[in-house]
Image 1: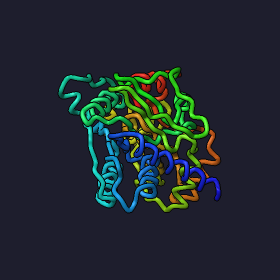
Image 2: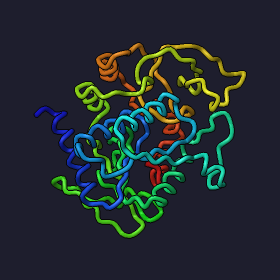
Image 3: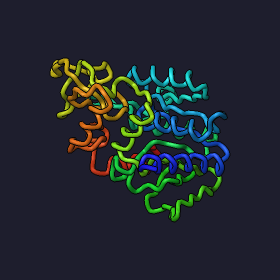
Image 4: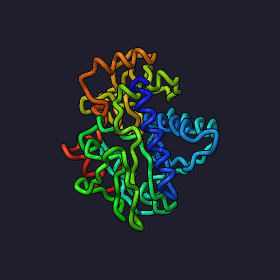
Length: 296
């Protein structure tokens, strides 16, 4: 077994532990490479049977069109259930207030929609594709990470996971966030995608796109960005290392059109994957504060 076999086996074991320990788990699906990898691992863990959980997508309404198209085609291909929670519904119901201004984003608003979706469907475990190497707050997570009855995370309330023994016992109203690929790196994910020949949305590969430069980052020119006369739209060859809202996910200059090109580019990069996420730059503890409030 090479190291990818070990990572795959660990992730499959964790997915099966979730199925065995929880009554109503769900797999949170963003349409990004990590959640797509989780779907591939779930197929290995549970086929030829159906998944013991639905896929759940929190739709902000500001997604990349390519991501939504890929999500829908994947669901049709695998024949599994998809539940979508809409941030626009939370806005219309007055449960959240949309940000205003040039750098407005709905990214933070999705926490409320996520917690409502978890409560509505009674999910007691939510599987996600977060990895410890992405961001320092995520490095504090255990693989089974308990959230209280308000969906909040306490970094000081972490359970030991010695010898890969995972404790899924929770009180009524609590839920657990589960991270099967927590021990993977960005490069591990790409090497696994290459080995397993996993299909991805086209935005992960170099393409010509209209962009504007904002706060030193290349942002896709979309109406959600509140483009004004100060913004200069230009066409560049870019790709995206991570997938989030169009309002907070920056592109990188790239000519990488094949997996080997992307892997070589990542090896040479001195910037982390989430260095292209504007929402992480609000403050030094931006991610940790969002996680405490219930963000995935």
